[in-house]
Image 1: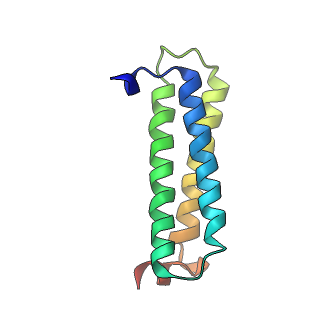
Image 2: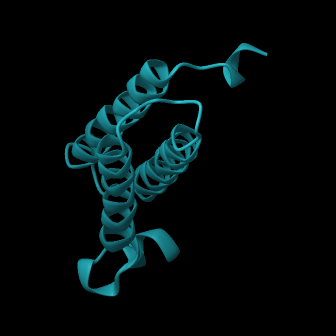
Length: 103
């Protein structure tokens, strides 16, 4: 199984690609109409990207990868910030999206 034998460079590239897709998906939401299905799809996509990035970050903390600890913590902190941003953007009642998501 090749997916389990990733190098640290491949994991970091995967995390950065996920970050780019997250930003692209969230900014394209503004160009779409306020269609409920588009918002739900975007929310699910953002959560999946955050989950995959978190899994890759956890794998990166393995002792076999010789990445500096500051880089590992920085990537993990960025992933957690994206997850918190998704939570606040879609699930907080002050932002106006929960009526679209849950109505």
